[in-house]
Image (cartoon, rainbow, N blue to C red; front, side, top):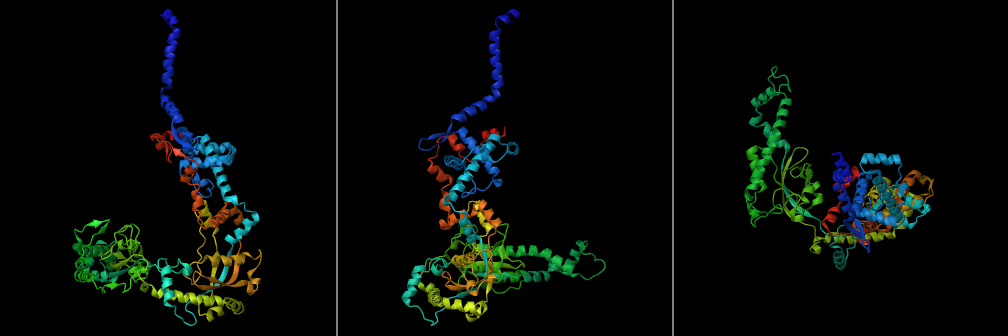
Length: 631
């Protein structure tokens, strides 16, 4: 046997050694095959030369993006885009930043080796992935900052623009609105017709001088009010709250209301508690009776999009609210006022809240949070509602209630969706009034210098008395709020100026606010407003959007301090605002330049047309990549 083993030892060693190696490598074979396949499977191509991007490359991209997305809150927001949304956007931003020389070595990741190991341990991603992801993102950040700062603003200009954008002014304001020309002249018919045709399909406040005659959503309502006091009174007079029932209730709740055996008089606390307990079920019963009576004539009706299809004779078949009122008075002994309505003229949806009682009533039928009447009726079918709530004309809506416990049954009797006026007659009064205001405004402009001189001499109070307008109102003005605008910029959103609201005027006028702030920014730092001459503190500004003159008397100013400026400079807020102004307040075109779709088109990036490539085109990390990341 020994002789045999010695004779064939080499052969046996080769056979059994190979077998042991196969057994040892068997668990790793799927992973080795997977890695080999990932290194050869085509996911996408880049550029005109169709540079290949393999599944292995794409897994690394998605792993890095997964890490970045997980730690987004601890990283400085990316200018213009806020955050990276897709793997292809990340890959192509890295490509552009690299081509621009903005991605440096691993040292630009900005973390030490110890910090790297800690982050890797806490995140579950390999150290190499963490370092490369942070390096790439830092390069993308530098690249986008460079794009924002391409205008090469000097420090002096940035400081000057910072004052213009963020300095605040306190002032007294008196507004003088145009009304009618001094001679009371009426515009001629041709001018009226021209004005109407020019602005008939323009929203009020949107046209020149705020002109616009497009009619808003309007409707007419009828409703029946069921007062809370009437429900309570009917319960008090019912058998459910007889003395016998009250004594039984008291007996059952003696622990809450002691003294049952010491007196025969039923205390008010017991009566009120029993009333509160009965009221909820009584309200439910009343609501059920109302709904049953209203639903009876429409049983079997077909629906379309959640709305009832009403027959032509529905106006004759529907239940009148007066019949509902009579039923409630008879069955529940309720004392009810006659049915109310919104009047002969239709009411705008936004004005519904002004209706007494029902205007502030709400329903919880369609949502956990109660929905107010105006919000509910914006979804009316006839007002081109989106079907969120099944509200339609000539069909009773859900029963509403207010904070006092009053109930309201309502129905839309007429609805007219927003539209241009059909004829001049629908808007004649507004058109004539606007033309008279325009004529009066031109007269006010001719008196502007005289008004300014008298205001400097006599003061704002005298001005308001002479023109019979509201007394001076104190206001603070600032074009941008630093904290708010910084948030917008950090999220990649278009920053919005502070609303340019002037006291007593219906439309915003940013030009007037900017004129006030421009005047204050001209003063040297350290200048006290109180030390200035009245001629330097008082100004009369035209508000074309409101057809009015705005009298302004400066009281104080608050300049952007050094620390705030440094913070805004670090966050690139001021260059972003200047860029925003250059784009007319809408930076969407520039932001779209770095969207995933634009980047793919710009670099001729195409996903391969195979199933595996399609599966790889997702933001989530695949299972095999997750396993790699956690090993």
